[in-house]
Image 1 (cartoon, each protein chain N blue to C red):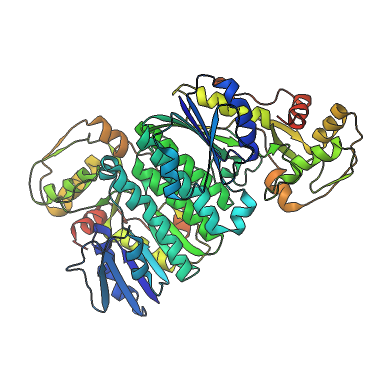
Image 2 (cartoon, chains in turn green, yellow):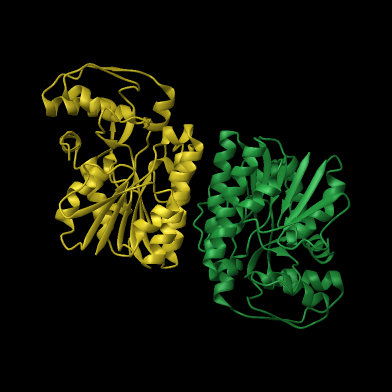
Length: 305
Length: 305
């Protein structure tokens, strides 16, 4: 089996590649790609640095084909909103080109796509189900939704076997990473764990969807090995918890005081802090799993894995 | 005002261009484009023949910009299903490129996009509303839905002012046109009007969504002049009638006998002949109108307009 990981240098990509060699010992070839690949290479893996939106680079990269592709490369929502041309190239035209070329080289290849809950747009208060209508409110979410539709259609035709996974903001991203509107969801982990005071931009009651990077990596790997009976778009299960409850759990697990001042940023609260409950029974029935509970979330989020 | 019509040589395009000069007398420039433009030119209009999927042609065509673009060019569903590369180029990559370039030349330009009810996929029996989930079952519908999402997002950003119109199969297409799965919906008009026997592939009870070309042209022109308060995706009203009722109306209006043998093609029946009712109240509230009744549908469909 030949395996490709795009965006291998990103937060999710680094978590995935750290697990790949152990999880796929039968892989004949594992290729990691990103614009910068220094420090990425794991045992027995190859790296290839380049711009995935360049068709010539993609041709070189994809020769002679892969059986399994994790397409994680994208630019985050805030950046895509500011840099529209970049967003179009990286978040829409690149996945379209990549999917066509992966399918041309290896018809029926499994493509695991890191989609986003940004596809939903304003969710209102009703429980999210398989019947929830997608009305993306950011260009990032619009491009993710368009890519999901493309991949589902290519899977229907049998040229690919794609699974799109709608990830929430993952925790805990390094404090240095920016461009994500959901950055506060990670910063609160680092601040409390370090014993620092933290000014959280949203209210303690804000209800968010939480997922640690290790949980997200498990979900990617589960999708990689899933049968073709799995739907082409999966909303993985998440923890639905208030920011205040998560802050208390971080303090409890790390033995620190939660020195958090809560704010009322209306925009962030609307986008990330007013999440309704989620009915993830479809994903559950196919074996996808969330972090077990709040304590498990905190430990996984701060583990560095 | 500068006006561009793509796909001007198609069935809908020809109906639209026949009405444009009268409807938009204030237009400074009207440009019609298609791969072949012979015989298309109306009074005071220009034509430009070329391949819209060629970026160099689009650059020449779009210079120095248009205030109003009717993007009608596409290849039909059956052909797109057989010729995947062509479908991708014409029905997805071309609209993406065109929309970006129209917006770059003339920010906020009105773009009227001929989408399709193929975006819905299998509708089941529930009344279609604004909350109906799109699950396209053909590549044609997937690409149309992707384009709708792109255009809605560009309109949200203010770079375009787009309206996507979900048209059903229009009647009565010339008997010579092929590639449309819904061809039977047109052929039944021509056959009965000519006094010929016709073998209809679906049952008389099959419920279809009907719209004449003149009604579709009215809808295009209404969208062209609509305020920015109109939603970016509009399901226009249609006539919801059985094939048998339509056959009887054609016979009545044309004074012919309906010599029709009905069949039971399961695929066509599922896609075109099992349409649920439609709640078009949103479109109605913004002034979009269906054919008035069955007699009006038949007269308009056979008028040649």
